Amino acid sequence: MPPQPLFVGIGSPNGDDRIGWAVAHELSRLAASASALDSSKTIPLIPAIRKAANPADLLDWLDDIGRLVVCDACRGNGPPGRVSRWVWPQLPVELTHPSGTHQLGLAGVLELASVLGRLPGETVIWGIHIESQEQRLGLSHAVATALPAIVARVWEDLTRL
Image (tube, rainbow, N blue to C red; front, top):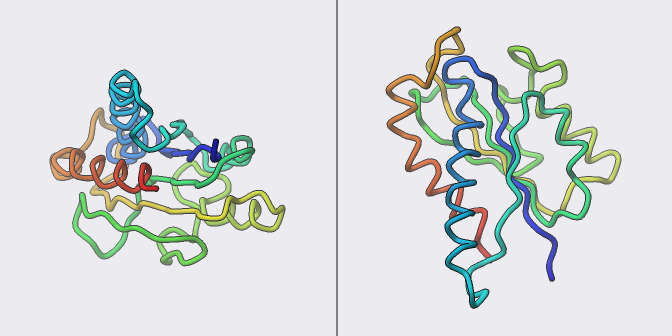
C-alpha cells in the first residue's frame, strides 16, 4: 500500500487563526464518510488528519507519509477567505516569518525537516487569508463563508492519485 498522505491544520482558538483547525475538522468528517462508504476500496487513500497549535508539531508526524498538506492562516494581499496554494519550497513572504504564538514559523519548520531529510516528496501549503486574529470565538463572516469551498478544494487535492 502506498504511504498515506498527511493533512495538518495549524491554528489557535482565536478568531480567523482557527481556520486550519476548522478545515481539519471538516476534512475529518469527509474522511469518516468516505471510509464508511468505501467497501470496495475504489476511492483514493484516505489521508491522516491532524490539528497543530504550533508548526513544530509537524516534525513528530513525518514518518511514513507520502505527501504533506498543511493549512494555515496567513495575512497577505488577498481579501479574507481567499485561498492560496503553494508547493514547498516556494512560499510567499507572509509565510516565511513566524507570527502569533508560533515560536518557529511554518517555513522554518519545513526548512528544518528538509535539512533533516524528513519531508515527503511533495509538500503543499494552503494559505487562507484572514481578517483578524483577535480574541473572539469563531471565524469572521468572510472566512466562515469561504470554508466549504476551501474544504472541497483541499479534499480534492488530498485525495488525488
